[in-house]
Amino acid sequence: MKIKTKPEDFVVSEVADISPEAKGDFALYLLKKNNITTWEALGRLAKHLHIPLSKVGYGGLKDKRAVAHQYITIYQGPKKDLKFDRFELIYLGQTSKPMDQSKLLGNRFEIMVRDVEVSDKALEEEVERVKKYGVPNYFDEQRFGSVKGGKKPEFAAKYIIKGDYERALYLAMVTASPDEIQESKKFRECLKKNWRKWENCLSLAKLKWEKELLNFLTLHQPSKRTFKRALQLMDREYLFFLGNAYQSYLWNEVLKRVLERLSAVDFKVPYTLGELYFYRNLDEEKQEKLRGLKIPLPAPKLNLEKNEPVVQSAFREVLLAEGLKELKELRSLVKGLIFKSYPRPAVVFPQELRFERLGERAVKLFFFLEKGSYATLIVKRIFYACANA
Image 1 (cartoon, rainbow, N blue to C red):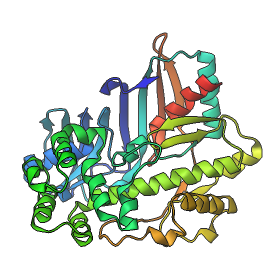
Image 2 (image 1 turned 90 degrees about the horizontal axis):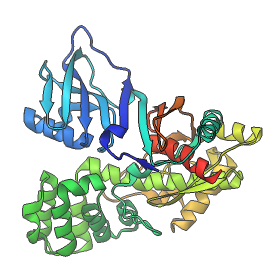
Image 3 (image 1 turned 180 degrees about the vertical axis):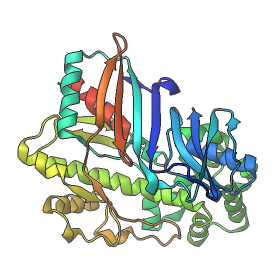
């Protein structure tokens, strides 16, 4: 099974509660991008317009290897279309408020799946099961670009919590997602080979905060305090991203254990950080249990006692496996690394799900997902189930 063989194989279009108004301080655009990350496109846009990135509003980050359509706003932005290499902005009008995550409703997907040997009958059966029973709402690979994967994945955020600031800094600076590697490969390779010889890599740093961080390290002796202060020089959004990665991994592990406790595991799918557990069928009792179940993201102030017993026991098992006695230990002494909790549905139900046969070994899936859920999980659930049937 192959997806994203080329960007046109993965098309995602935002559905958002935003539209042009009679007047407003924010220019509203439809951003169309192809084979470029949202961050890179917005960074290039801000540089071209000579404005801080904070003046650009957006609802979410879209995959690099995809054709994506998403809404953005620019405070007092130009009232015209803008074209760049691999992305363009279509001017839609003015709005009184900026685009942000709260206005994002979800995304429509058209995904081409290649090199699959599966009958239409098997596909129809699995599509109907997904419509009826939903899919475990895991965070998928895209969430873990900053993580060193393997049997024992390493998280920068976990080392920050434990107080090993140098290891945390190393992982944050050297480990990167495939998208990031292409843009800063030489810089990260240099750091890997010249760790603690910061001056050797300073000229390769592209981002302002990276340069400031390396300059700081060259002027101070290596110590726990030095590495902690260096972490605080990181981009705040990137620090938050590091925390999200660890938080999301813990949440995935909790959901896996919940499914085990409910005897709702029919097959397993490998991913960067281990395996994800899926079911094909659910009896009425399990279906009712999972349909309404929400699992909170782990955070220091989370009160476990307010959750279902099956969720409480799953949390305790995951914390024990991570070497944590209680959720309060998820506190960080590095400013910017914050763990916030919110309830996340255990199961997601894709809407308007259907497929088209486009060749003997090619199938296209169409569906809508609410924000925060991963389309790649729907693909994996359907096609791995066909293979394991």
